[in-house]
Length: 459
Ligand SMILES: Nc1nc2c(ncn2[C@@H]2O[C@H](COP(=O)(O)OP(=O)(O)OP(=O)(O)O)[C@@H](O)[C@H]2O)c(=O)[nH]1
Ligand SMILES: [Mg+2]
Image 1: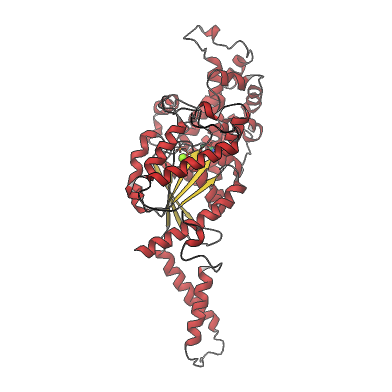
Image 2: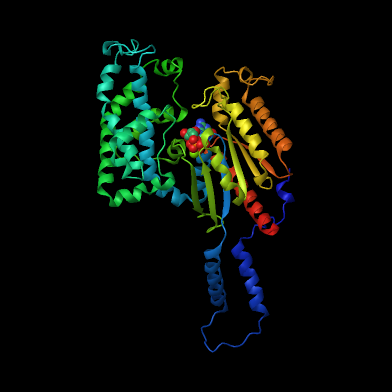
């Protein structure tokens, strides 16, 4: 493994501009000084002008750092990217908060509708409407009626977030799409990242703006009932027993329903990181640094991690400076939602192996993120045994031992299956913890920048 210090072009702490300025001053100092006809002439202004002209010319053609985000579905790829944007382009991140509010409202509404459906559906086959109720939740029938407007909220939010308004004029397709979702985790919106323009669209499109206002009013009207539903004793345990536990992000939004369902709600950074929005296809994100090395351009390719989509990743392989591969360490006891016979841990390591041995990317540096360490910790503490799912694990059932096992296994796989020697940087992360992520991402930024410089040297 190549250490950071082994790389050429180590950062000196000087910015590119400082270096250019020092160079320019040296050049100007070499030129014989001819007295200027203008008494106000200031050589420093001249240097600044030259530098500014050069900077503008450079900006026009500055090549971007390109990073491909890979990994199984729900491992945290999009959340990783949100962290990067929050750290290095906070203005752009916060400019999208309005669009995220609609996504968060959709997450909350989906969770409530899901619970109401689950409690209204008997475990056995079809029964008469009087038998619909789960006996242990006598309030639910009343809450179901009171929370009925949230069906419309869910449909409206999905419509508003869809970029393809023409396609969404067919209300049946929206309903079909919602009912088609097999799991609460599948909150997806067609049209890639363009939905983020929603805030701008909403300001000039009165139909969307009016529709969003109405969803906020309806949510606020349902706020107390959402809180009552979520505080039903035994509800969470009941869902777990039924085999339909709520995802961690839904639990978070339900816990904060009092705040989120208010009409004047403004999402916090944490809320945005928790929001679940399945990536569809491959989304291209352009990020221009606002802090640190300002004006640096980055392009991220954020892929959809589902098994059926992985063949499309290869078309991005030949044009990136680094690959960030993200794995969730907490879903070792879960199976793929589309293929119940496929265990998620097995899927992750198999995918990692095939990425390592792919010859198209044999030169590209890898950054491996073993993510969701917080959920791993909670799961093991709650009594789930890692060894029950991974047979060759024989150490203590704690997060430290399991994390060590993951790291060893993934590093050994990289070593064994990589076609050439290349760098691998491994990080253990919790992608919803912005503080620890910012420390990691600073290192990552340097590694990728160096990889890009090395790539230019090789050309
Ligand atoms: N508790 C916890 N939640 C996380 C962590 N990382 C991501 N999440 C949550 O996990 C969910 C899925 O994360 P995403 O970033 O959407 O996953 P993805 O890999 O982009 O998934 P696809 O787009 O389907 O391929 C989101 O609700 C995140 O907030 C983590 O480290 N801890
Ligand atoms: Mg994603």
